Length: 218
Image 1: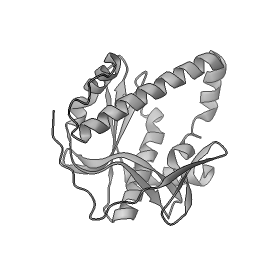
Image 2: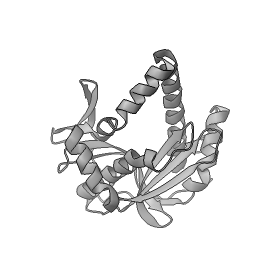
Image 3: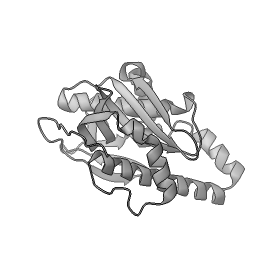
Image 4: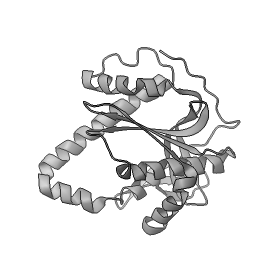
């Protein structure tokens, strides 16, 4: 098991409180600003396609698939977080298929070091958006926003656009909060029963599409 070096910002980043209004997630900053969650905003992308899928397969089956996928994603995410935090015996007691998915992305995780932020609260007073980043650390020696994802099947580059925008928001907000720029966006995706995916993008490529989506849905 790799041992990660943790380097946190010179000041502790404050936390944010989560609230729900009208089915949307909002965060309240230490300055008492109420900002919509980046994930709530990006969930609007592809809503028509998702509803068409739910109609096609039926609500009961769609709910079952969504619930299973959510539990799977949470379990793999938790293992990644424990691993990055150098917790011993992180895999003990976990279901075999979850361990298998984690093991598939472990080589990607081992390219990470010098951790800046783990599951950290971030917000932007410029964009009026908030959220929690999985990880900000060095990947192959370069500072990056790193997000863990799980999927039932391999996704195309086009299907990952909202992941790139999500990472871009975290990069933008981290620089706003700390003064440290982050250009690289890394998506590590465990795919059930298949090879994992590693997607690399940049903040500069996705900041304008992100702003367009925020303007449309926020």
